[in-house]
Length: 267
Image (cartoon, rainbow, N blue to C red; front, side, top):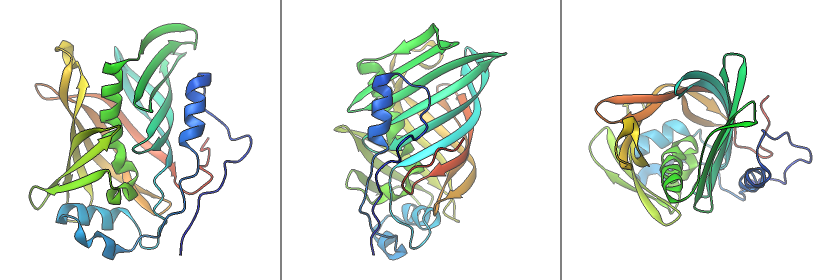
């Protein structure tokens, strides 16, 4: 039995994006089928921590769809901690677009991060008019590629993809070598005895705390899970740099996630 994602609905509501990034959003959110249905026996060839995670994260019979639309809220550090809400389309290993609105008092700060076709971009504006920060080019792209590699855990069916290679470490830890746009990223997963993911680390390009820009260790701590369309994913996380200790710059909760086509607008 197989399932195919269907064409996008006309008039699907989009988050506020530039024309170019909006086109990227629509392309990433396109159909990904046909796909098979999950059989737990397929996970038997994975290293034990990965097997536990996959069996915990995917309900039997779930279509192995890998594109997701996510809605989240939380706080992000943009000089200081600001509340935000965001939507994201995620399609490993092709790319992602994350569109957010943070709040500086009563003033909206809108922005996006994206990675598509090996190119990363970021832009933040006050009132959608006054530039606050932006980035593009090789350094931004390297950082965004590392993020995409780590976020394959939000699309658990990717565990069986040809671009993910598993190496066991011990009973609780496993390494996923995730290839994004020709570059292999080493993603370390810590998995509980119940199969729940508790921590993830990956080397990402950045300059935390004013350090010299380069490959730095990035962490994600998972505190809660939720199930959407048959996938159990991290739903409450804190993430940041491991540079002289944990340095969080974002905390968020995923309120909704859609995997079945069409990817549903959540608000």
